[in-house]
Figure (cartoon, one colour):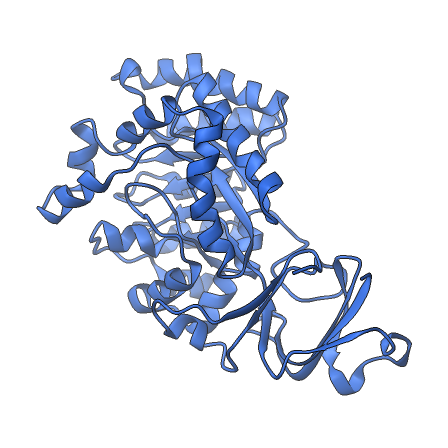
Length: 399
């Protein structure tokens, strides 16, 4: 079917600055894109003869977007969960050889088919909640073959499920054990050459890194960003999660798409992000799992007009979350976002964090990626815990 009209709907277009709600609304879909949206009584006569689908007053939003995930990985880290319950910190676990490096060992041992098979159930859980676009990072290989294998596995997901996948190279995630104490050598000999190889193979949409005391300094991350810019790739950064290392200012200086975590970011950082158009990606799942106390500077982000995205940060150690609806609830409960901010965080702001301009809103010319919910009040999407009110998911105009 090339054209269809969705009628009797409450449409959240996500027009600035809120939800852009249209009561008794209609959306015209045409060849996988949105042709028209507005009040049903205003539907142009030239479009009115297309087949109609009555949505029974349900809420329609843009489909959800997970703009920060690590869903491709090997193994699990349930044992570390037990250690944290006994009082061990993220940094203590990492310095003892656990954390990211334990997943590196399991990921290096898995072939591409195994990585895909393990990632699919995580992806399916997200799709079941109305997701149509997801970012997937590498970063658990930390050697050329394994990093490329992770990126290929991530690309393969889009061939196996009706979903868009954006791949991000995260070679500067941690220093592997064979380069312990030699982070600069790792960047020179492994990370940067692997980025060139991944780019040459067409496997990379963006470049990321972990700027932290247990990972890489801002000076070291600048080397990675310089190469990314040389290759014409946008950058983003895990910044100010556990301490203030200057990563957010670095991200802003390089015009990063996003700075992620940002619990220890400052009002000055927010000002720099606003000037550079850098999105703050908030990851309450990691905050919750790590029992963190330092809240992101939400008020500063609001004051300076920094867009705030929300994401699962789905990963085996610090955020084993495969629910954007739960993430929205945690964003409101833990970070005091409003339900409007939470819904914008997984739609329009999440698209911006990925550099996408064809999704995240309901407007003519954009992709027909929509979620239809068995709710009337949009706040219900953030209010419930452990309940999925999705009625249907539309991806490129098709269910």
